[in-house]
Image (cartoon, rainbow, N blue to C red; front, side, top):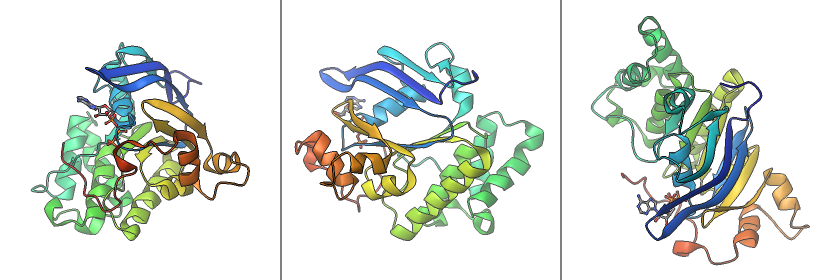
Length: 264
Ligand SMILES: Nc1ncnc2c1ncn2[C@@H]1O[C@H](COP(=O)(O)OP(=O)(O)OP(=O)(O)O)[C@@H](O)[C@H]1O
């Protein structure tokens, strides 16, 4: 980890799948210790960007650095700095919460002597101590999400990457997930990069947001500054997004808030 480098620096990232340009000349800096929201409609390129920076997909063009480490050349070192909660389910319903977290502790090379304590700590921090020895299959949606956060946090990452962390959850469970994210950030100083379709959630929880559309960043600032930039015309971040992207949002706009998480 290089001192003074931002958590994420993306310069000129491009990525295409055959004729589809998923990410198009993307430049982005995520500062250390901020909660940064990447917002955009279906197909905007958010997940592709996250896959490149978590080293799951090699960048086709441009450079991506995590705390100053190039994702192409320092892949394993980058992985050690990142905790990732993907959109698809990453907890095994047949295992208890504790067993799921312990599995991640092994996978991410948490030293053997620390595994048990670190597992108990993150389970406790995510409010799952009472349910830790029940199969994850018996958990509510909000509890599963908090279990997945515990899995991602057990290796004490410097950057936590969350792809749609609250999709399909009811408002109480959504608030519970955000509360745990804020608590952990305050305690550890980690950086959080989150994608979401929920504008009001981004406005309430993110220090800065980038509005992404058709593979490009259309606007980037604090939620308040983006709303203010429309000189009083904008009521909220939704209006800002419409202003910067026009009405040509692919796929009819934002995902239905009731949509269940998909398994990829
Ligand atoms: N493996 C793939 N093969 C072909 N095309 C892909 C693949 N992954 C993504 N795409 C295409 O790239 C574009 C960007 O997709 P991406 O998943 O990055 O968007 P997103 O903003 O994360 O959308 P969502 O909110 O639906 O996850 C879309 O047009 C998508 O269809």
